[in-house]
Image (cartoon, rainbow, N blue to C red; front, side, top):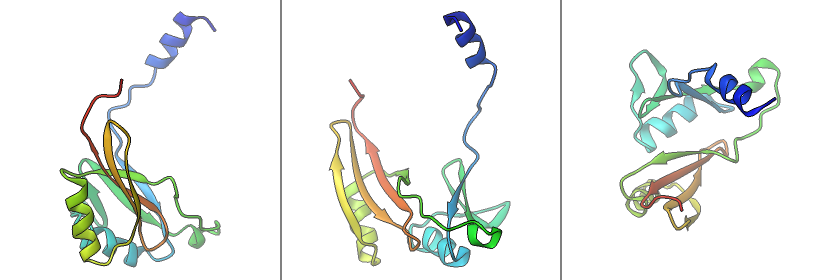
Length: 130
């Protein structure tokens, strides 16, 4: 495939945004409570079994109910916060344990997990990547 064909095929699919991500859980009610009550994410107005993180919906799914082995998402996803240290301190006061923090040279991050072991990253970019 030449460069023109690659460019044409890349343009064939127009992605507008991410609508939802699925969070694997063994207990959807417990997961929703963590994301809503502990993290403070609002319930989705279209489906109160889900929560919203900005423009993205977080949907909770029990894979074992579909005969699929449960495995937490250890890569996780990042939630943009105004101040990583302040957000971490607030969540620690609610009993959330953190695995660590990182300053990549372009962003601050703090790493924790939900009750099912899915990684959740508090994130704030402060400089462009060079």
